Image (cartoon, rainbow, N blue to C red):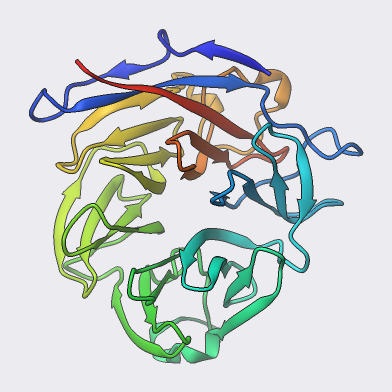
Length: 328
């Protein structure tokens, strides 16, 4: 496993105050090892999450180990999560009373699942729980294209219909439908609310919404009030929180770390070759250490190391080890 300095790949910008400690990272080249019978992990159009013991979970579309693959801290393939579907476009690992659970939204299956890490399903929310008049219609049939899910501290489950109506549907901890907010109409004007994240850096907590085709990230209160907008992004696809920072995976080839004021303090892995970004066709021979092609899922471990799953037909997950926080 080779560690490469990012000193030439990172663009550092000051936070609004200029005094906040800024994170520093090194890319870990070649850290992930597929299962023995596979050359790559398989097509990825999903997400990545990290459990409390540092194991890395990645959702894979197809192939002999489709579903959720699990890797150790050293990047070696360990196992698949039994029974996990292959269409978790967005999922998180959430710690709560009773342990750690996978919450996933099925892109094709039109359901939300809560699973133990061993694969046991403990909650299933069917798409029928959402009123049909809040769904997209095709030839008179209502359907969902669920792209992401997250869980508030009080147990409420937030799921976004990001490839369809851009609405965010809310359920209680037992899976009872509560309400719906956001969408394509004003004041939201979402163009593809791709993934969301409950952001507990603020009091009260809020929702960060990656409006991919709107090229912006929108801050919402948990009851749907627009609180702020971060503009001029490179089609943000996913966001994760660690400490004071929000890491935003932008599918046009970079990851930005933002402070609470929405200012960029760090840019990782910017790819200036536009033919290699926002596409799943870049071959492993053309991958460059620490340079992104299409960030699609992001996650931190409890040490602040960053994992980025790309939209890629071969399957690519990059790792950046946090080395320090330093005042610049």
